[in-house]
Length: 92
Image (cartoon, rainbow, N blue to C red; front, side, top):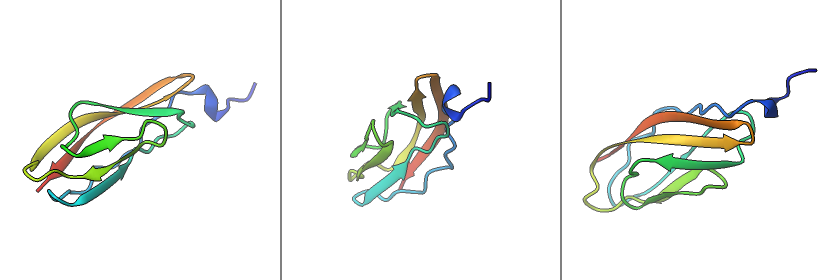
């Protein structure tokens, strides 16, 4: 039988996040192949950001005093499994 996209776990395809600035709004989309049904982040996002588990959008206003580097694992899930990728958010 032909292989369909949904027969594979997601593969997270994100690039390095753009730099954020403390006190400013920020958005970042978790991108993945194979029709993910939900998303999550493992690790500590910069303060003020949260992930929408349905859409994979990470958004919020970066907290004052949140400068630094934050390495997290992006995860995307479907019925076949999960895909993961580590990215580092940098806040100035």
